[in-house]
Length: 546
Image (cartoon, rainbow, N blue to C red):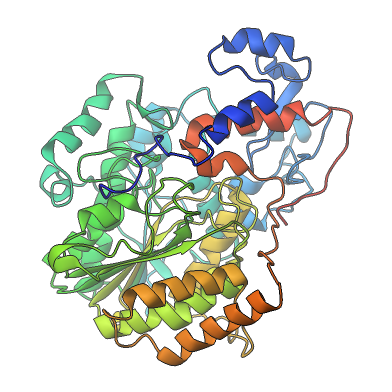
């Protein structure tokens, strides 16, 4: 994280009053008081009475027991989303096995014990076959499901991987076009390619405790260090396999995520920086230049910090920023790297929520791809967070699975097709499973439909692109002056015409507070607010996310 950017949780505001304080006051929450007392005074919010509420598997929102479908996202309470991902029918329960409805509920409640998962030491139970046409390698291990904040509803939860793998299997994407690699833990030496020994030891030490918090939003249980080593090890082996020709491309379906983890700092749900470890592994396997494209809705402050002065790694991030008020507060366009790495960090910051496919695809067409082609990477790594997807409870943007497919297709034309996709964030299970499947289809050789010829940016999108052109024009000659002039003319026309439109905010029910500070604390407050202002008798099945 650069020295001139606000530290996590220490953002400053011109109004003099932290927006979180106003939010808490507006919702009648006393941050200094006892939570139990506050909750007992709120007749509609009774978090300790779990017997009359159920949490939505898809979006985690609590629901009154009489609701069959989630009032927020419309997902059925007995949805099969964990088994089939986006292929599960939204408003219907999972197919009943012999024994009827009670058997469904019983099977759903049954959890595989930690000991059983650890003793298996194997990858997803689906069938993998070597695909001669594309040879897409997939990395996954069930032991990563053991990383969990037990007893609480954290957005970064094991269900994320279950839904993604269930969706890939249900849609036939695991049956012939990919093969699995054996999972292994990254070594101390491999982790220290990007992290300090103190950082690695700090994560390792959590194995001694049932639950540890590095920050209020970043937890570790006694299995989290193992999960983090597995995630990094999978990325190391996928990068090596791609560079040595054993695989054409690859997808690391892993957790915990990594792009917020700095050289010696754990933060933002991230323990080890998986994409950074993969980049160094690729270089050890022969890559001279590595491109990392980060489309997670949050800036990858950790990845930027690790490669800040390294001209052999080009880091391009497309993210919400909002003048530093959106987590983690870093990633302004003028942060371009330093020393020998100056110009090799390209930040494309959105000024608002609601950004969708058109702006993302235009940014890729006119900024990401021209710079990437000039850089000529030997391998491309995608930090693939799907929290900019439509319906994500934290991201507030509007990217569709087709949008992710288009971006993947563009990047697959680089580096001779050597492309590694590394899972980062994304917290709506239906959105992330559909988006992951769209990406996997491209990796296996499918082509998305052609881009429209008449793509036009939103005012916010045009402004972000113009800012990047003005910043990086002196570093990258492939940025076209014609595009620069067109964007300027568009903004001038809108300004003279008095048009101040923002992108359509499809995420109307989303957490405005997300831009104010730490992820988990505010996520919990949002959940409380959602239930406080939703009367149990109101059957509101409208979905602002879809």
